[in-house]
Length: 209
Length: 293
View 1 (cartoon, rainbow over the protein chains, first blue to last red):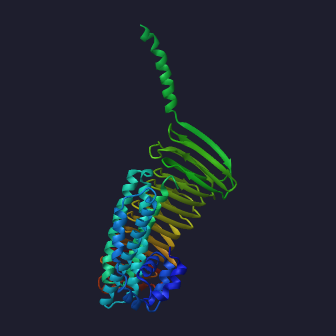
View 2: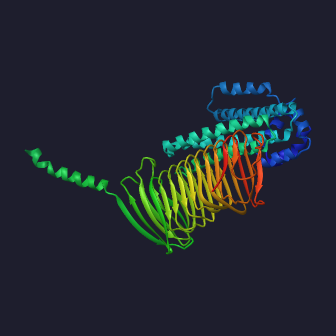
View 3: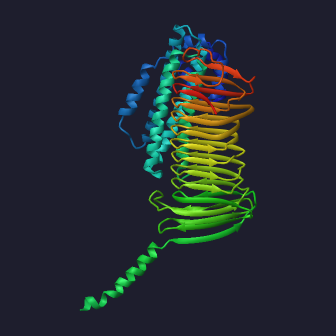
């Protein structure tokens, strides 16, 4: 598990493109979920060249997908079941991180080619990933607790989530055309925060809490 | 003959048993606590009524139907906890009613899932969490209100030192709101009547926002929606700096210079009466309107 100290130690190497692809992916994955490290990264002057250089290396390694397939297809042996599942989870998590990193880089490349500042776009991509990950966690927890809430309340929450998701999509689309628009960024962030707050309220409402 | 003769006994027994099963349990309990005690009240379904009084004690009258759960009340000095506990099928249990008297200056935390909650004659701090249950607070100024609901309506009549409300679909209505106010909903309408705000933040995704009143000198009113319309009604002699912006909606103001509006999507900014308060309204596509009263 990558820690903040690990990230700080390797930030220079990351900026200079000296890290192995999997290490760079790990750091980017951590940065996507850690505000402090994200700030560190955002503060770095050579961010843009760094990201450009990383794009040559952060390819999903061919063996990654092979490993996923092998893990998914291999029959579960009683003594190896837990390890196999862990491996699958690990590999899938790694794949997710690589995909997040790639999608971030693609976004950056698009922004770079349009000649706009990359910094706001980087920030948006990073904090959106944060919000989405947190919302996914809370949604999973809410699904687990569905039976503890009245159906009407669950339906109301789902409807609210749909309203918020629609607002997020709309603001996100607009922001992709105007990445430096502070009002749009604020509206988008607010909608994400609304989503988290709603999910949190629903989760904490159950009798278990 | 034998059957007829023996019938009345089991029948009467059955009637007695049935009467026992359908009888509600009424519980009255009182415990002493400090005047500023923290009191947790839980009743997931049914009703909750909380009233402040000038005594350092909690008094509860609980009415619990069969299968409605078991009543609990405990604590002393500065901490107390009461409510109806339902094991197992929480949602299937019939609702109980709680009528609670608490020290007027206490800190009260109330949790329900569907139970509506009424609070009155109370000046302390109120913390409310509910799913579909509504909240109605009426009467004397409270030290503070924090309320979170998913779909229940929230009505506060009277002022509080601070008011923080979050709701999903539920409508939030504040009458005579004062001081610091934050109301955030998803679809729920936000309505402020006769407000006199120091610092206020009103935010929805699609719910409309209506605010009638004024903002203190050097105070701030910040309104934000995605698609909800915003109507502000302010005194005609109001002194403030305005920034009104709807990226894809319309902006109109009865206050301020009668000059051409900026291009759509750009903020309409102006100052009246030499400034003072700051009014900021932002929306993605909601209509923004500033009226006078």
